Length: 391
Image 1 (cartoon, rainbow, N blue to C red):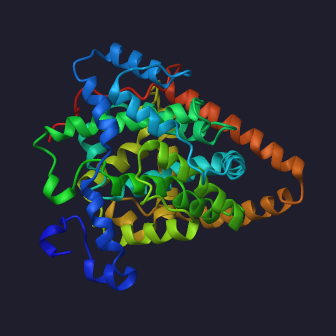
Image 2: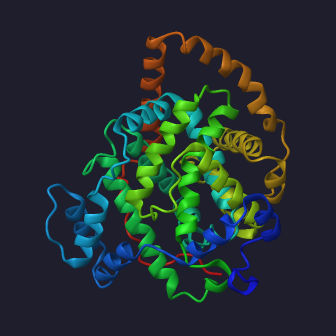
């Protein structure tokens, strides 16, 4: 691949080729590939009202499936096809891991997985341009929690189940954002590739899978080699339903880590959008305050400071510095908690009852977190009608 054909977002190319051989040159073309089947569906909804779009999508993902036209048929034919490699037993075991992780999993997802995504200076552009995090951060984060917990629920990824339907809705939401950005002068296609392209869709799958399990281990949770493989198998199937091309989907934890290392090697340092998105996330407790008295404000600030310290621990000092995170004493929270969590895990591993209790508490945590974030609303994963951010 010539230097001219490689977008400027791809950094440290010589180092990447030394470490990963020709994998970089095989991956780069996917920066310009999207999801034609989902793109064609949202094109059919271009002139519909928000309510009409919502009704059309609800009807389309409801079992039994009906004929909604050629574009819908092509998308659903792809989404309902369960590949031969899908291992339902492994997917079920992966759900057990997610549920027993509970609060620890919530911290890892929010302050490691999502923040690593925000730190990617080209991959973050669709979210930055949409303005959704700044405008409705708590709701969007609750949607992310709802999506993840639905995917990991028992039988959640069976065709027609809540996790499967949520995945398909997110796929269409991505296509709609792509459609809006495609006519925006604020997006640099030459430098960044297509918005929400196959490369960046793969990156998201990695953030929710191998980056997530690595974070659990950082906190002291016990994650066996088999559990890591099971978790990859779950997100391998999610990747299929959400529209990642099969050639790109990692088949093992080792392959997923190799992809993640390559992508980390070739992306630039966090930019101004990275900082804005991260601080919008961390300041969520303050923005969500229903009361503005001194005590409530002090609690919200303490929550923000703790989150900032945990975030620095999860992403490392180099990225944390680039994101403008403070070096508060809270940055030592993870190493201080790790021994205690490991001790509790050692006891849990010897008791099936305690594992069951951990899963129950974890499920209750996710239910409460999602409900609180949605504030009585529903995670619709609606198609946005416009970009909210001005630049």
